[in-house]
Length: 151
Image 1 (cartoon, one colour):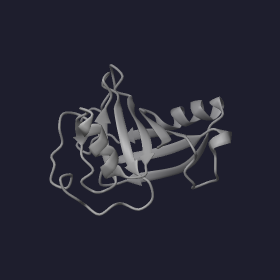
Image 2 (cartoon, one colour; image 1 turned 90 degrees about the vertical axis):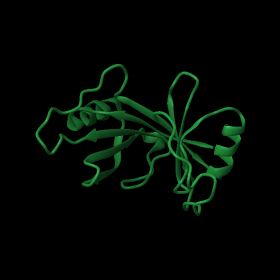
Image 3 (tube, helix red, strand yellow; image 1 turned 30 degrees about the vertical axis):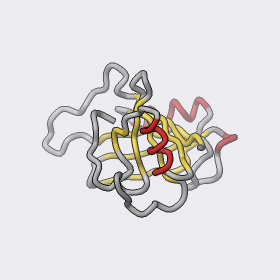
């Protein structure tokens, strides 16, 4: 397993980037999702930086959820909601989830796509598991397993 990133929700992406730049991180890459209405901005420290457009060895992911199209109020984050999750790359997402499940861990978001799953620590910290390399082919029991709880 390899640590990948920590996700933080931000209200003002440019202010957040200025802060993390002052801290010594630099932007590695940025992704905008029109359908999901969000922007992901990844930053890494010098030691973790691999080059523009490349995933750093360990990153901070700034997630900016765009204002609603209907003009309603923008979501505000309280009670730690601005902290999203820890993310780890795993060699075999199905084996990892099976091992966790056998150990009594609830798989909140099963790896139906052969790529991504979410679990929670005993303290409720959300952990994202991502398949290293190519997505695995969808497989049961994961492909038809519903989400459980919040992730």
